[in-house]
Image (cartoon, rainbow, N blue to C red; front, side, top):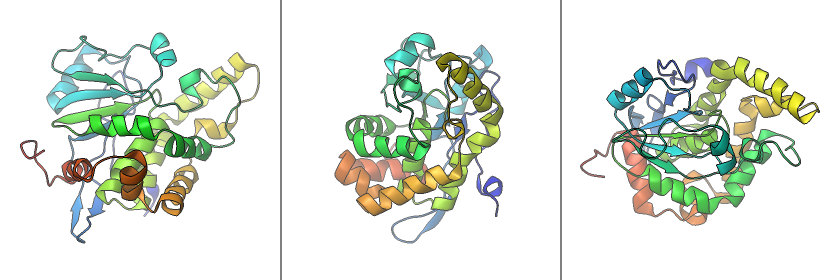
Length: 260
């Protein structure tokens, strides 16, 4: 099967955001060898939400959204506000948990990474404290949306960790990551041109692509260095087994809100 066929994640029909996707619909195998498909209306991945229209917000409320986790930096928030920032939308909890990515989070200042794998590896290796707080916020009832600015890098790492925790195989995890290129490719290319003009230097193309190889390398790094996603989340990030069981159970559709 092609990556497009493997990816069941289609963007929600929103006017003000083009890459809001549900993590439901992916096949998984749990620790006991039981097969299933990840549940919808539990976790949404997305880029920035500042362009959402009233109808979009109403759609997300009807979809079951109860929490938004914004992983952008304070620098980014100062330029692009979020549609769900505290108090702006009743009944939807907004949580700001910055996750640094060396690129968008600091306005592309400093040395640019050689590849996106280096960005993802640095998040995995160096941001355990932020990831622990983030996974605490992911453990809750209803539907939770997590996002960065584009919905490719920081969002891609969290989606990878969630899907892997649930027992989704690497082919589908990589396909979910690569789908951003299909839905946001034109916008990513435009961003590269703009950033190159602002910085007055040619910015590497790889920084504005969702190349499957980058996520494949990241998964290989986690397995080789930490022994897998579950072990990494427990032993390095510091998530409790109970919390991980609950998050995995929700994504698998085996734990209801009342049980969580």
